[in-house]
Amino acid sequence: MCRRKQPLRNVALILAFSYFGIIGLPTSATGQGNPIWELQRQLNELNQRVSDLEAASERVDVTVHCPTEKVADALARPAGRLFITVIGVCVESVTIFRNSVTLQGASPEDGLVAPGLGSAILTINGGHRVTLRQLTLSGGAYGLRAMGGASFAASSLHIMGSGSAGVNVYDNASGVISDSTVEDGDQIGVLVEGGGALTFIGGSVRGNDSYGVWARGGYVSLRGGAVVQNNLFHGITAEVGGAVDVGGVTVENNGGFGVVAFSGGSASVHSGSIIRENAVGLAAQFGGAVQLHSLARVENNGGSGISLGAGSSATLFNGTVDGNRGNGVEIIGGSAVNIRSSTISRNHQNGIALNDASVVVFDNSSGANQIIGNTGFGIACAPPPAVPQLFGPIPVTAKNEFCPP
Image 1 (tube, rainbow, N blue to C red):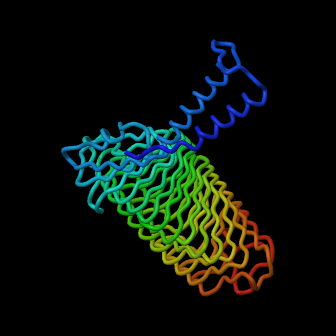
Image 2 (image 1 turned 180 degrees about the vertical axis):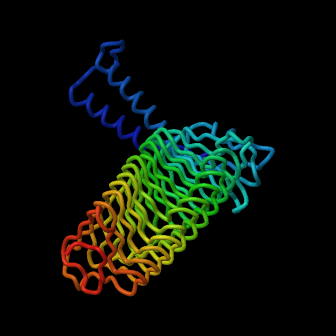
Image 3 (image 1 turned 180 degrees about the horizontal axis):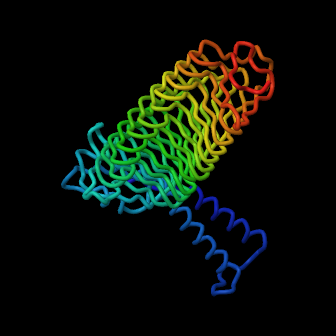
């Protein structure tokens, strides 16, 4: 047991005695309403606050030996900075309500297994300064959940086999997950919703039976070489006011869209990110918006590189759309794309295909945009009664079909 230091108490007492000496209050007076009694009461409250702060600052180390011991019992210990090390695998559903908790595995295989299919393995409900390290979370409906405005930082997690979502951040919670793997879930790898925010750095989200990463009314930032791959449907999705920011990330081999924004969602893909070998590369539907910029690439996807529909929009700025087996950029349903300093090349159909009343804006000199080497036309416009529109200097390398002058 650490001895608590007394510096704040000593300072408070010295100040009180100095105060008495200066104003000449009688030290023998007692009773409620007397100035000395009131100051003593305040000193007692100050001493208690100091005690509480000192207790909260003390680190309490606990080792949980699974399966004979439980993490929940360790979390029930008195106040303090709680540092829990798990040895083995505990079969339990754990909720962290308190602040200043570190939960880690002694080895990468140590961690928690859900006690039932409908259980969340590890929930952070309102806790702050929660740190998770080197844990395996297996099974259950959810691997890791954060809610109630909680905040956390996690690293080296392995979350697998979740029935609903491997990671679920919602109800204004926020967190950072680094160098971790979320895989083989029945539905969604990472779900952020309801005002939640998550930064995912490095690691991978892969092999989930429905979707990789989904922002639904929440915000997800993927960074630092993260990989989203081999998910049955879409790799990364933003919808209903959700937003995703994808920088330095590889999105590959997903069965639907690599990255898609719809129903008011938005997605920004930048900093050399690569969207490749998905069914379709980058898409916006039903009022979604996407950006491809800062040397990001959409390449070698099975259908179109970029697909826009139903009143959606895209901005290409210093991006590349190359080698896709459909059109490079396909625009339908009154959608629009703004293209600046970008390259659309070697796609197996047309470079850009426009239908109905869709719009393309080239917003700088014709030489800055390159539409070259596509198998079909550089720009193909649907014939009347469609009324596609082109604005700005059309690249000189683009051969047109049915497009207005």
